[in-house]
Length: 126
Image 1 (cartoon, rainbow, N blue to C red):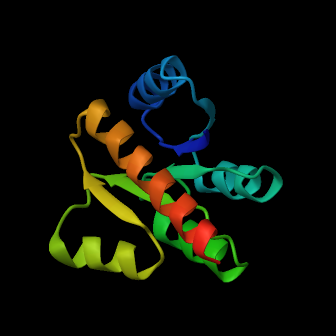
Image 2: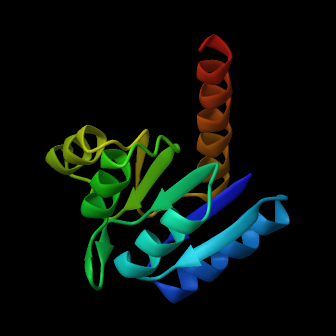
């Protein structure tokens, strides 16, 4: 899978990049909303891991823009913003799944596999 990891925390970003890369995925990383917008437009991804609290904007805005242009890539929100209202807002903006921080990387990988299965199943029925 080719995955875009959008995370402003450098340590967490590198940890996810290394762990997911070791699992055989191709990983691109973005630390800001601007970087995420650019990469998401110029490169097709199989999944996006999206933090919401970015230094130059909110991840939900980035997600809404992608959905507005018709991008249906599976998105897993990974964020410390984990109140019920925030989860609802993220899912309503177009996220496919939502996981609060702190999280276990094994669970992130399992959720990515589930998103990939659902994407394949949806594509097979169209």
